[in-house]
Length: 388
Image 1 (cartoon, rainbow, N blue to C red):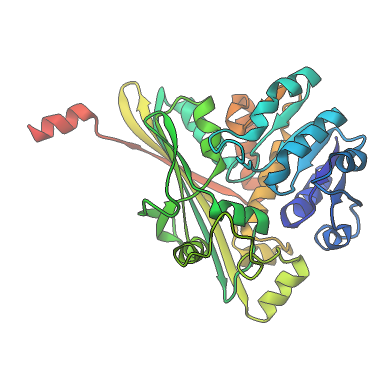
Image 2: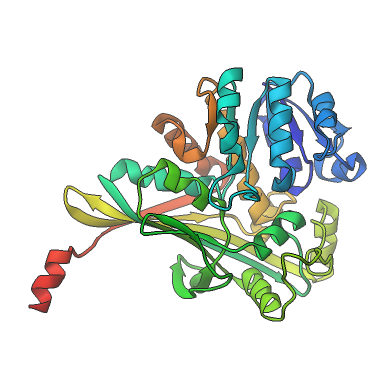
């Protein structure tokens, strides 16, 4: 395919390189092509393209079969319209949820993509993205789903804040109230509330996690029948955000402070931070817990996703953070197995089962390891018998 990647930062630049290795004809667009070159290297072309300007995107992406949106999610609606103008397929890795915190904005474009006979694959990264696939995998194995719990771990061993993700995306998530789905209804919860202890596999172990704004809540209940869903995050990155929130420094009306949300460092800057001892390591992990039933037996299915640490990624000669590594590699697999005939707008959980299984099957070759286990739960009848 001819693929145009809009937004050549840490994730978009690495993703563009992966797509080129997969044999696609790739070029990029960015509002600052000179800075983008530091993420892309010398081989990939990059044109001036501002995600705020629909016609600028159309001009830079002319001739593409697929438009990959790696720009901040606040511009999703503009980029979706650009893809329709280009008659191109579309892929993004996050939602903005500005108009409706309970519904991904791209879903409003479903009929327009149907009319153009094009596919828009949304939230196709690691979290959201891979997490959605794992919930759908559980739905395939169970007769019904009751509860879904998404748990993430983000840790950066650094003296100062280092953006391992887009600064704009991190700020947006930090100031947004978490959406949750309880007893079949959407509602907004208080930020950094409902703390609990969650056990990740070694070497992470027991971690305190709290409610966070995650895009999976805006699509999963619309495509899979379930009763409860929430997402929580733990790790020192999230603890730092909670501390700023309690100090009154994270207000939605406030502007983004560069000291707390610095620009994502380029590969050379990451290397410099490591040499100076400012940044020593970083980790990212995810877990999906699904509770339901099979043939009347209550079951719990768990998946853990292990991502190489920053140190391990460096040993491979790659200058990416664990979050950008996981997001870019997963998005590249979504492109590899892109369902060109599934017209309309679809999140990962709405993909055909064979496509979802193919993506999960290819993950280990990308350095992303998944482990799973199942646990039989006590039925309400057994609890009543024990009480008697």
